[in-house]
Length: 246
Image 1 (cartoon, rainbow, N blue to C red):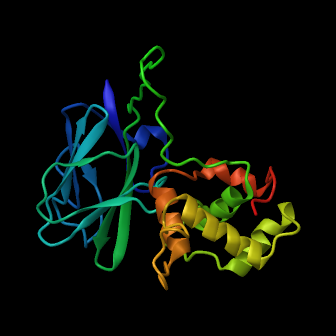
Image 2 (image 1 turned 180 degrees about the horizontal axis):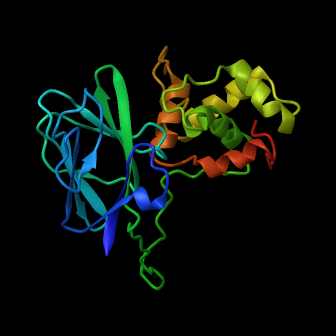
């Protein structure tokens, strides 16, 4: 049974996809060996690398002499791993991956899917002790969550390095479902989020004169890293529920 699917560049149909089972290897490059993935570009090494399937994940070997490869998670809002030249069998944990190869001024890519990822939930009913406190207690019906979603939206929409929206842009984005929104209310909710997510100390613990710069960047980085906001959550920007958090 296959565990990894390789989708070549400009793949036109399911028949063009390459399926490999656990333990099998697939080479890729400008002159890939028989059965390998051929990437016809002068900037790609003749033997560029190798993919090894391993149950629910896969391994990537970079066989180039001087090029670093990047494996991106298209669903991870900028999440990626770098594979330096000569690195063998680097584990790639993403379920959906895009391998990016620099090639004489171009960036070439192909996709790798690992659809056999498995998840489980432990039955904790009847276990003694208190219930585990949530890591991040966010109310998805609140206004502050709508502000956080609007902050994360550009990067969740597929532009992982997009600049964050200015406060004026946030006001305009939120106005259709929050008619009374203002700059001050957006600023207030950003400050509240920074406190709630422990990105800055509370009034009783803050040092005199201490400021936290880049609150928006810190909020988005934390939210996307720990999946506090997902693409599905952007629905709150179309129908914001709940009361304004003031």
